Structure formats: C-alpha cells, structure tokens
Image (tube, rainbow, N blue to C red; front, side, top):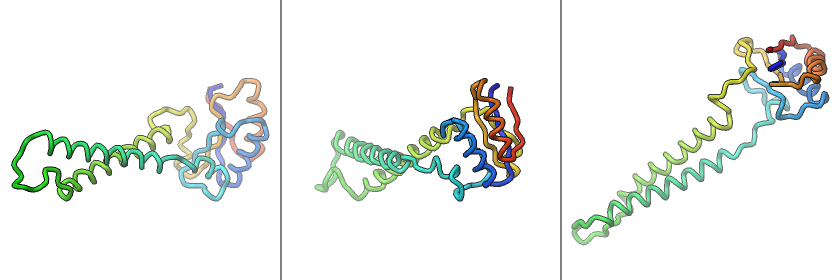
Length: 166
C-alpha cells in the first residue's frame, strides 16, 4: 500500500484523527494533513509554523548588500576616470544599486526557502480533489504493511471515510 488517508469535514474531527494516529504509534513527521484553508485553531495547524525563513532572508540580503558594495567599488575604482576632484567611490549614487541588490538577495532567498520548505515541485501521492472543496485530508504516506489495519481503524474512529492508494 502506497498511502492511506481519510477526509474530514471539520478541524475537530481532523484533530481527533491526528491524535489517534499518534496514539497508534506514528511519529508527527509521518502524518500528512492537507486543508484548503488555514487551521491555526487546531494543534495540527501549528506544527510546521516555526521556520528559519527570516534568518535565511536576512542572510540573502547581507549577501546582496556585499555584492552591491563589491560591484560598485570594483566598477568605480578599477578603471581610471576623471571625476573632477570628487571622490571616485561616491556613496549616494551607489546606494540605489546596493539597495536593489540587497532586496534581490533577500527576495531570491525567500522564494528558494519557500519552495524547499513547502516541498513544491515534488509530487505527493496524497491528494484528493475534495480538499479543494473544503474537506481536510489526514493520512499516512507509505505505511508499513503490518500497521495498516491499526491506522485504518484510527482514521475510521475519528469519523472519516478511509481511502487507500495501492
């Protein structure tokens, strides 16, 4: 069996299913929950909340800042030019370039982090069109063959219609 899941009409029954799957011996990372809307009122809606995206975006911004400073410094100092007694490396015109590259670094890092942490582009076996219509999917991807009956019972006990992907 490739996957086992059930659909639930509301967050309360989905939370019951998650709790029953945990009590059946599944780890938190092995339980998949999909919903068409945020479910922050329930525990399963907050389990993947903490990320390092802010720190990574700041790091990307810092790299962009350093790239902008390096680019402007190199282009203004490596070629001899007559600036009429003014400093060769001028801060005010360079602030625009440095700012844009700082934002580019932060934005690109944020997008890459989002794609990686949301697992976009990777096909999941667990999906049902009813999720788009308001149902909540709770399931297990790749359950052990000997654990399947217990998992099916846990999903049914919470009131869901259990489906298997063979």
